[in-house]
Image 1 (cartoon, rainbow, N blue to C red):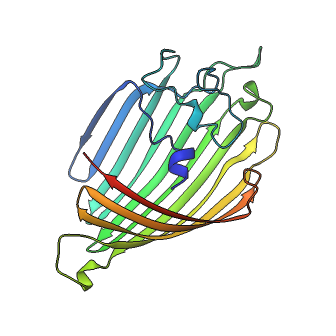
Image 2: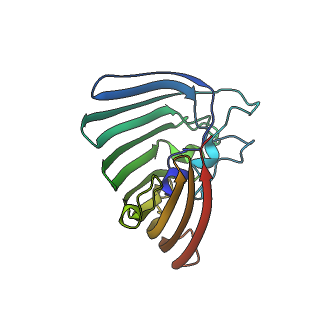
Image 3: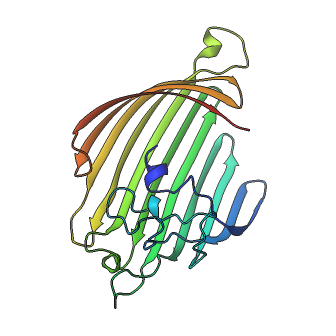
Length: 239
């Protein structure tokens, strides 16, 4: 999903420490990590486009060092067979202001997520928001609020054709997001809505062949195309 790239910085490698644990029904994680930096010349921030969060990642390979520490926490409830539901949150200072005499902002993100699985059926849903205070400390057009969510359902159809450990789930995903519900100048990007249909073939539990078609509606200022049809094919594996 786009929101796991543009709002939640999911492919982010950062130095930090964490603790984790679980009981019979609850899993939890908490940690301290290097924070997003909204003003970092090494990564070209501040950004006022769709990458305003993604480009704020510093990364553990940067020589800039850790200016601020982020508090990150997650808790999941697993007390109902096949169901996991939970929340996670991120809070930190947003980095030194670019505009002199302006205060440093605060960055807060949260998500609510759920997964349900029963035999060959699986459903996932997630909703997330990100908020930046004092956005005008970084740019007059700096985004200050993003939100998005998606629902994904899939069903493994391969058992209807053969008895095998391989899996062939067909899936449908609906996603809706706005990467700048509001900006410091009072404007908004507008929403993006997408419908994705596809299938994933798992010849091994750690290998997947993917094919999908996405129909995307851009009701925003980020794209010159109001409608897009995108075919994607890929190969994925886990070491």
